[in-house]
Length: 219
Image (cartoon, rainbow, N blue to C red):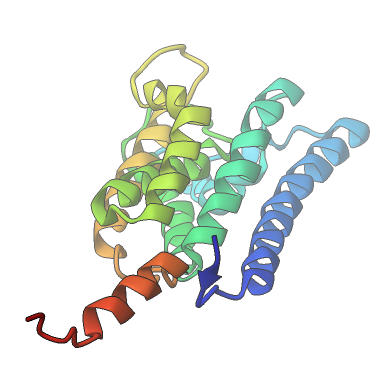
């Protein structure tokens, strides 16, 4: 079967590669910081968000880059890469708004409302991206948005339970704030990225030509 009006698949593939490279670069930066902390004998956790304390405000900027352990960072690495790639590939314009709002807005929410302890890690970003991609797929209900949301949900749908209070050493407040911001921005930014061109198949073209043909009257 022939496909006419094929979109520029080369540009589409290139955009996917760029999205993956950006997400991977951020994950590698997190690992480089963890390696520096480990080899230098430092403890960066004190630069996390400590709610309602003036010296905890710096954590709004620093906390997403800090992880308590290798296992903590490892748990965030795959979601950051996979969901980040899906977000940057499917919604590049919305991502320019979503990421800074989740990054800063989520940190402010944690500083205002969270438990008194140091809150660190990039999981708030991961939850913001997860809930944005999942929600916007339902809102727009287009082929690509549905596909992206299904991929993300099937891979990391179990993360949604992270917004509920659980283990004492898990910052569900970061998860919840990121998730709520992701949902709200999915509604606000639902039309920011245009729908990709629809493929037209040869049989559709033939049907159009048949419909336009004036058939002669039969005797």
